[in-house]
Length: 351
Image 1 (cartoon, rainbow, N blue to C red):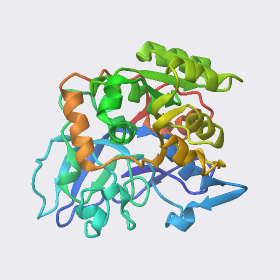
Image 2 (cartoon, one colour):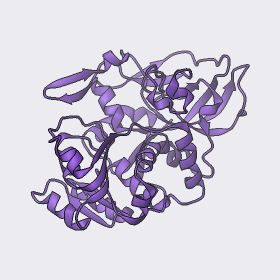
Image 3 (cartoon, rainbow, N blue to C red):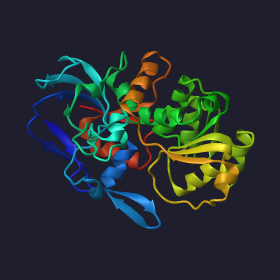
């Protein structure tokens, strides 16, 4: 099998050839049909996360030592089954839920494997989709994607379930009656606009510093788009939400966007941070009880949430998001385009 691997942090991905794995036990081998290129891949490729205050988190501390194969938004065709594998057949095409835990701890037993402290995430801790084959430990992580193309389906494994999981953290009564502020109009932000509508939401106010992405947000269905770098961005948000937002989701996650997001909240509002850009903020503890605001993190999504989302998608309630297709051989160049902010929507690799 062929894969394009991180051999050196921040270096070009390198073509690697190795024997195609043979599934054992409950494992399922897929031939990769599509693999999304995600912003999380950039942080992994860089080898570090910004903790703020000049501090960095090295991915080696999270058990990630090159060489390894990225790619966690995977669609594949079943080509081989382990002797104990059940639930799929050779030739089935499936979307892969990559956020796989140990299966034994309290969060795994609750169905929230994405929060496991001993993760086996595909494309992060285990070989992922920047390859022509992927080994999945159990068929339960394979989700039917209906009549979508593999390229359309792949981003739902991360950007889709991540936005869906974040939106579910906002009270349904708030989603249905008040606009939700979405900071960042990249792949996640654009997908969140359409998923919010599919969930019966009133609408989204998009915030981004890039005019092209604000335009894309409006075309996708945002009811307003605000320049987050404008000196009066906070005032504009207060006006657009008629006094403050009850739900803000930050898909960037920088110090600047966190300040803007918390400033935009109304009393009783909830700020949900998803993005991993990194940084830090200083908050007055007094304002937390006075304003009764909540600050919550949201990390990808559960297998159950991915299945719920795909039910909406297969019902035709979520329109396809903008995407560009690239051959697997251009994995390194595509990652660089995303790193430079040159991708609108989602980039997907196809072998």
